[in-house]
Image (cartoon, rainbow, N blue to C red; front, side, top):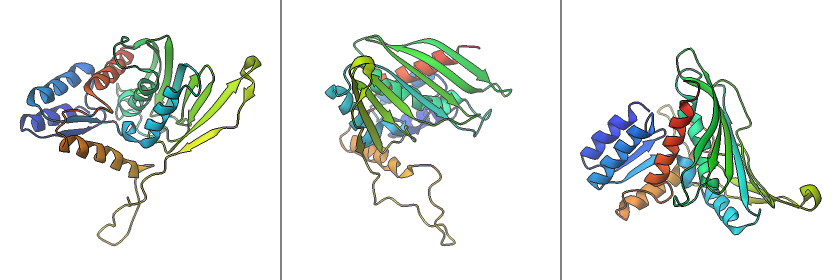
Length: 269
C-alpha cells in the first residue's frame, strides 16, 4: 500500500478515474490527500474493498434494516491466515476487511458520530510489521464491534451480527460472501431458537479463469474471485454516470475505516 497513494495521485493528476486495491494508503492522513486530490480534480476514486459490492452484503444490510433480529447491538469478525507474517501489516492486509464489515453492520449515515477504538492488542513481527491484532471498537448508539486479524495463524474467517432477537452468521469467506444465515432467538434466556433461514447469493456463472499460453486453465488464486466482477460493474456504473465516488463505499466511509486502522496501529507502538 506504500506505492498505492503515489500511483493514485499520478493517475488523478492526469484526469484518470482510479480503482485502487486495498489498502489505499498506510494511514488516514495519506488517504485524505488522495481523496482530496480526486475531489479537486473531479474524477472518480474507488477504494477497492471488494466486499462492499457483493450482493450478499447488500442482503445482510437489508435483513438488519428489516428488524428481523431486533436491534443490533454488536458484531465480530475474524480474518486470520498463516501466510505472509512479517511481509506486510496484518491490519492493512486482512484487518481492513474486518473493520469494513463492522462499519457496514454497525455504522450509521455519519450523522451520529464516529466510531472509536476502545482497546487493542498487537503482536509485532521482527520486521516491524504487526502480524496479529485484536481490537474493540465502540460505534454510535452503544454498539460494539470486535475483530481479530493475523498473518501468522488460522481462524475460521467468519463474522456474526448480534441482535436483541437473534443473530446473523456469515461463514467463510465472510469478506466475499455468497450466503448469510439468520437465526431468530426468543424466550427465557433466549433459548428458543427458530429454524435457521439461509439467504443464498450465488456467484455469477459467466465468469471463468482464462487459459494460459500452454492451454492449461489453472483456476483462480483466491476464493470467490468471480466476485471481483461486482466491483468492476459498480466502477463501470460510476464512470458512465459521471460520479466521483461510489455510494457503496464513499469517501467518508473510506476515511473512517482508515482512521480506525491508524488508531488501532498506535496500540503497543
